[in-house]
Length: 103
Image (cartoon, rainbow, N blue to C red):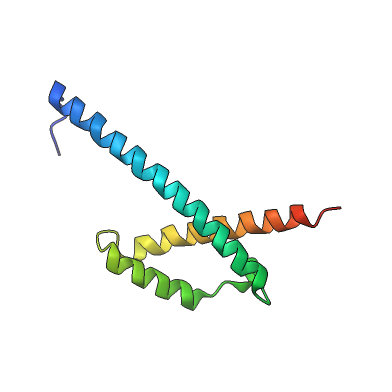
């Protein structure tokens, strides 16, 4: 357990660190959007795209590569994160494709 007492310097440090987290989150959101756009292009080119065309072996290799860059998170946590990222990107791509094919 840690001490719950905060001092003015601790409060300032927390605020500073949270601003840094906000900056990282903004960059992460931009990267996730970029990833989703690229993945949507791939889905349009694949013979079987979207959820039916998921390549679980490729996803496993992707997670293994990421785990080398983020060992603190590890493969299991990254697998859960990337499953969500990939699923969200596929859902967005499917919705976009459906909108484009409406009369």
